[in-house]
Image 1 (cartoon, helix red, strand yellow):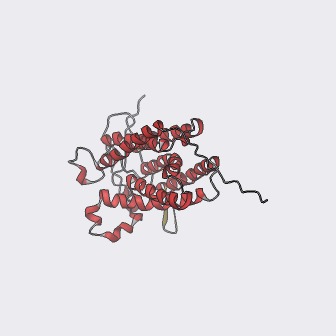
Image 2: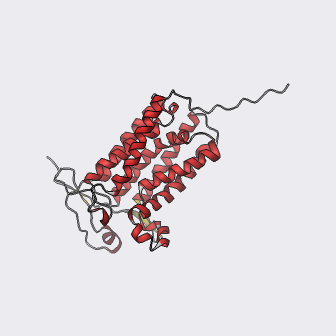
Image 3: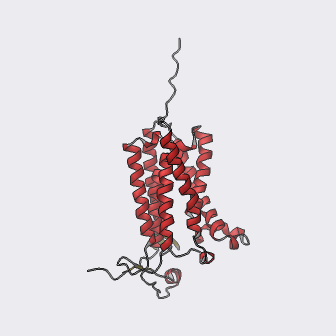
Length: 288
């Protein structure tokens, strides 16, 4: 028997301590980063990277993700408001993060990291970073599901979700929930696509030595993540009112450059000979 619809009644908060909420979104965000760090650490050890590189890359990535995602949301989706209220940009606890901004922030941070720490091409670090990043993106989208946000258009498909439309009022003030019509659970669609990208990248790195082809993993990540995002946006509700009359919404327009860059990186990597990604440590000279 097919389901008529799934009524999603999960509370965004897990519990409260001293008036402070612990939310599913924050928990999933943290779990994604912790598991991502463990994967990245294993990759760095496999490539014989010096001790401390992974820890520094982790710090650069966390800071860049938060700053880039917040600025991305404020600039790409809410500039009309934040240009008049610039101090509100700092109110990250009120919500508003954009993955495209986070990606740009991470690329800038890893460029600095490469110049100051590895002294290698940015492609070396980014190729290794995109693997755990794809998995972290899965957890973030599941956090969006818990928050009843970024869902899609109304659908008659049996896996449609009825989300709580007034989730803030319901959660904070006990107002009776108002449920949407059965809608596309686009958070799950994206999470499944990102999981597939993660599995592919892991296979390419560990089984096909893709880390020896600079830019290949980064290119596959860009195409896999942002092309799937581009397609899913067709069934996702607009995030802001100004997108209503756009042929392609902001998420799609921002995804196109990443897809093009990904294709270019893949072609470039496959046209050039493989180069070992392992760090060759200098052998100290013997004293005479």
